[in-house]
Image (cartoon, rainbow, N blue to C red; front, side, top):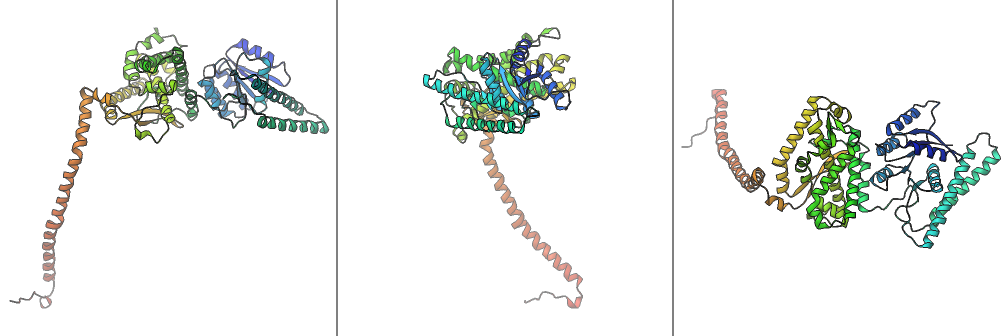
Length: 530
C-alpha cells in the first residue's frame, strides 16, 4: 500500500484527486494539507513515531502554494524516504527547475489524462523518476516509437506495482511467493533492456528519466535553476557590510528571493513577447528593472493590504525615485545581461576575465541582480513601516527599536561610503562589484569592465577623490624612491661613519679601563720608538 500525502490549497481538487486515486488498488490518501505549515505538522507527527499515525510514502504537492519550494527542501533534508511528485498549475519554470534540482522525483502539470497521471505516479512510487514533456511536433514514425516505448514502460511499472502489493500480503504460500518474485525479476530485467536498447530521440525533457540523466536546458533556465540549490545551507550575508534583506526572517528572505527569480523569468518572457530589440534594451533597461522591482514587491506583500491605517503597496511604491537612485540605477551590466539571455549577445569584458567562461559571469550578474532587487523591495519597508509592530512580527528578525535603528544607520553609512569612496575607486580601477550566491551564503566578487564613460562623467567630490588616487599613484613611486635613498644614506651614516667613530672611542676607553685594573709591574705600556 502506498500512503499518500496531498498538499494543495484547493480543497475541492484534493477531494477529487483523493476519490480518483483511491479507486485504484494499492493507493491510499492518509493525509491532506492546504499549506506548508499543515504539511510540516503532519510530517512531524509521523516523525515522532506514534502508532496511530501513518507513514507517508509519496507527497503529491502543488508547488504554487506559499513556501512550496521550501517545503520540498525540508522534506528532502529531513524525510529522505518520502518521494515527492509535483502536480501543479505552474508551467515549467524556475520554481519547478529548482525543485527538480533539490531531488524531487516527479513532475506533471494538472490537466493530463488519468491514465498518464496514474502511470507517472506509479513510476515514482516504484523508484523511478518522471518528468512530463509535451510533444515537439515530431514525425509520425517517431511518435509511434515513443508511444510504444513509453506505453510498454508504463505497463511494466503497473505490473511491478501490482506484484509488489501481492508480495506484501501476509500468509502468502512459499511457492506462490517464489513465482511472484521470479516474475518481478523478469520484469525489472525487461525494463532495464527496453530503457537501454529502445532509444528514441526525445526532447530535452525526457519522460522516464533515469537518476543519472541530466536535462539540457536553455541558458536562461539553466542559470535560474542553478540558484535555489545554493540556498540549502542558508542565505547568510558573508560580506563586511549590511544588506537590506539581512533584517528579514530566514524563511521570508528565501521566499522573497524565490519570487524575485520567478518574476525575472516573467520579465524575460515579456521581453520576448514584446520583441524588444537590443537597442531598446540599452535605452529602456531601467524601466524594465523598475517594473521587475514593482511586480516583485506586489507579489511578496500581496497578502498584506493595510498596515497602521496606511495602504501597504501604494506607500511602498511611492519610494520609486529613491529606490531607483540608491539601488536600481547602480546595477551593473543589466542591458548586457538581458541581451545575452534573450539574443545570445556576447559580453564585452576585459581580457583579465578570460580565465573564466562567459556563463560564469552571466551567473554572477544574474545573482547580483536578484539580490539587489530583493534589497530594493525591503528598503521602502524599512523607510515607512520599520516601527509597525505587525511588520516586526511577520518580517523582521530584529524586534527592538534600538536594533532596527542601528541596522538602518549601518545601511545609511554603507551607501555614503559607497558614494564617496567605493564607487569612484571602482570606476577608476575599471571594476564592478557583484553580490553572488555561494553554497555558504551571499558573498561579493569583482569583475573587470571598462568604465571610461562613467569616469569622464564624474563630478564634485567623486572627481576629487579619483584625482587624489591618480596623484597618489603618480607621487607614491617617487616618494618611495626618496625615502629609500634617505634611508640608505642614514644607514650608511650611522654604520660607516658614526658607528666606526664610536667603535674606536669605545675601544680606547675599554683598553684604558683594563690597564687601570692591572698591577703596575704587569702593565704593558706602548713602546716609544722615537
